[in-house]
Length: 335
Image 1 (spheres, one colour):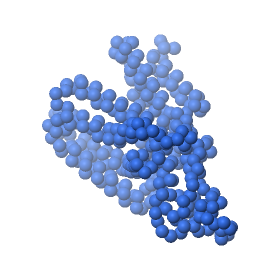
Image 2 (tube, helix red, strand yellow; image 1 turned 45 degrees about the vertical axis):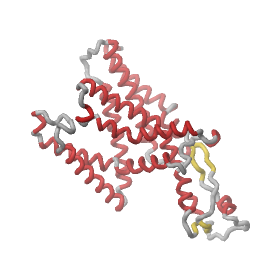
Image 3 (cartoon, helix red, strand yellow; image 1 turned 180 degrees about the vertical axis):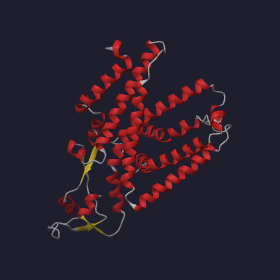
């Protein structure tokens, strides 16, 4: 089979078969989500007991009654189930993206190892592993477009989307006008230095990218703040394990800090003052390894970010307890 179709095609066929068969029974995305915990909405009886309502509360036809916002509601956590995942927005897209990206990384690693270590770096065929990587990027863009389409239906959020797109467009124009002695983008060579169409396309791509990552970046920053906040317990993934010790929490916080600020470190490798004294070959190697370490760090911190998002219910409830007034039991359960 290898002699007829070639090594890359064999790896591609086997990987596609694994993705279509084994992923039904074992999915990395599904396994990650099922390992998380969420808070169950408090029942009407729990709310009434927390509000010291001994008698049956006065309700309307729909069973709605009012309690003080300052009432302390005990929250009970439970593990995610398959039924919980079915109601999540974009769950199937996210699961497919994570599983496909894992298989694409494995295909790329096997192909590079084969042609780099076993075949002496010689390859006279098209690198099919790059096709897998491009498809992974395409699926990620599809997911971001779906998020943008969902949020842009609201007028205020659409204004925020346009604002971020305009800001990224202006920032892209400012980056392109920087001299090559400050920022090295490879656009100062004669074939590309006078190509204004290419620069205009790069500016538009920058604005489009800003529009795509607007809502995901805001959510990511909010989750990061919940993780590093000293008043939250989002880093705890299993309540049965008890409180995390100090050293473990500090190490986890350090990983999340590195994950949040690591993209800035990768961007600094394109600035000439930082890369001074490094050869072009060594610089390319450093940039590739920096991006790979960033992806690995984000993958390691991903369960913590997802758990922090699920624990946002306790943060909203704590914020509600500081407000005055009354709230219905239905609105409290939605919090």
